[in-house]
Length: 257
Image (cartoon, rainbow, N blue to C red; front, side, top):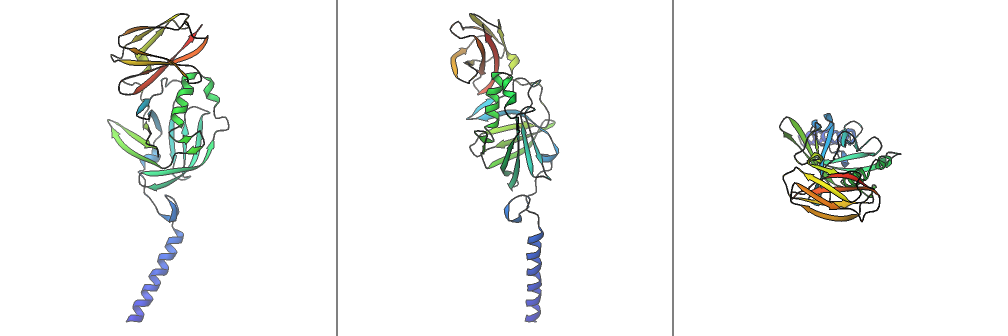
């Protein structure tokens, strides 16, 4: 009886060892399989905002720029995209059911070509890719994610190892409560005085940046109509970042003559 028990145990052990060798390595080291929500792979995820140091940044013009992330289950890859050229691909390793890390990062050979559109884009590009990479090179592992239902669409939230977030939706939202259309600036180009209409019904902080991202002036817009003296600025392209008390930000550009 004891001999029979030993033989059964030995056969069972061999089968376990064999099974360990044939299990695929997807989902982590050591052959561990982590079942992922299929909705992660079945949807194209469109960026709504990034949250860095508790400040929110939004794409200001969905007609020109659409930021996305896409997960590929078979190839175990992701693609993070902001425009046709500004994107990267990376291998992905799932750490558990709601966590992953990225490695083997491949930037598009033409990465950076889109920054010539305007300074507004350059500002947002840095914010967006800083969720995933340090200096466009080193991954900010590990990442965690959640998927939840919002009204009639899904929302994917990804948090990096430093506590910053990127929020995506399974549909492209056309309007935001706090958006670029809340502000009108004129004349543009401007020589001396920039007029700003604020229809957001909120107290707004407005900061003027040059193309290098250097802050030049800050103003508090407490009324629906404000003016800013720009006579001291050199001729060129500038952009104004409008921030409300919740930390949401949008921006608009103007040309100083």
